[in-house]
Image (cartoon, rainbow, N blue to C red; front, side):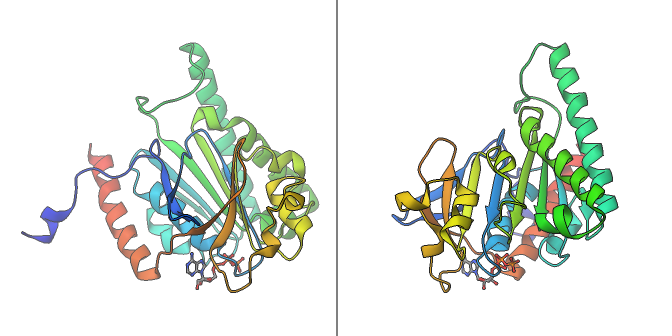
Length: 270
Ligand SMILES: Nc1ncnc2c1ncn2[C@@H]1O[C@H](COP(=O)(O)OP(=O)(O)OP(=O)(O)O)[C@@H](O)[C@H]1O
């Protein structure tokens, strides 16, 4: 059998659960990201990028998905650049233009849904789900550019997180600064999934998961520094659960990128 024959014809779908890792009890962590958003936060080196890679991998392998990557650090998501539909590096102006474009597309989709009397897009619709991945949030919202640009970035992002879901816009955001100025409650509460990696204090853990969880024993500051990849996952309406993300090596990521490119070129031909 030639190598070509071993490539399956179909990829994944973003309408199917995304594999993130395993819970403490050994069960798989598979999250439904469609119509939802996810926030990943924790101290530097805790494992956020590794977590992001699992999500981006699923997105890249889903031909019905358009991948928009914002990489303020230009190293983490850079590996996926060849398969991204849009890639923004540490450039606040480019980031703002892209968010404005996405907001206009979201509004266009809502007008269309309204016209056909529907509430949300689903897997039968011939339009791509758009996955917006932002690593590191704080670089765009608090470090680069002027105060005005940062405020505009946060305003646009908040609107996309608040309204994007039904229009098929998924926001995946990561930050190593779990502080109230970077993750205000009003933004945090819009994320249906929150993944808290190791933090230095119980109050930073609460900033990610929500007020009161640390005092109930769900405190990401109790994760030991050497437990990289371990995090508390809170899914809408549930209780945080301790998990460990799956790990993809750089070599595995590059082969996934090659494979995803082949799947996506089929999409263009089709
Ligand atoms: N699930 C995991 N399994 C095994 N090792 C892991 C896992 N997650 C993270 N690590 C290890 O921890 C290192 C740091 O992880 P990662 O780069 O994802 O951290 P980060 O939170 O994104 O850091 P930063 O905020 O500085 O970007 C990885 O290079 C890897 O060696």
